[in-house]
Length: 217
Picture 1: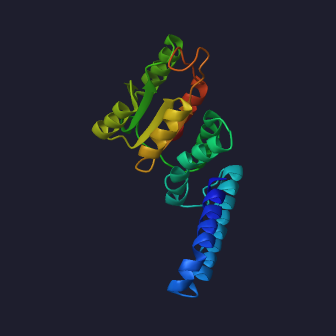
Picture 2: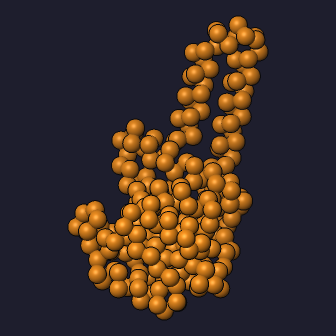
């Protein structure tokens, strides 16, 4: 939807500016229409490959053209376009994270336990926190409790892990993936919020352990 909006907006811009563009060169408006159509076709091919990768759980595109590149650049765009059409941001963010994780899962990436970092927020319930710490202890993986996104990014800069398993709400996860996932492999686990934001959050501990095992050698 976001790519469609960009293509339509570009075509509309060329249409409105066509008289002035024609004064510069007669062929310029037509060339811009062709360029816009080419970008639309490239976008459709890209979306098709992303879709097939998602369905088949196979990495059909290099990571810089998928979950660690172009897809990251569209995450926020998808949220904003969804809001314009009345779609709740949490819903679009959740869908975007699901696509990202599926593509990231298809990559064969392995690290040692001391090269991985688990990032969790401070708002986890005591039960959820104890569960995460038990997993971290079982596999001997460093864990960092981030009170803010900036501290999570600082922890990554200081510890320099080669892979991260992160836990956050949908909005913070999209922001974190946008800032970090282009530089190192990340799997993101969203939380359940039974008592509202930033309080007693829970998570799927079985999925957390599955994410951890995915990256371990």
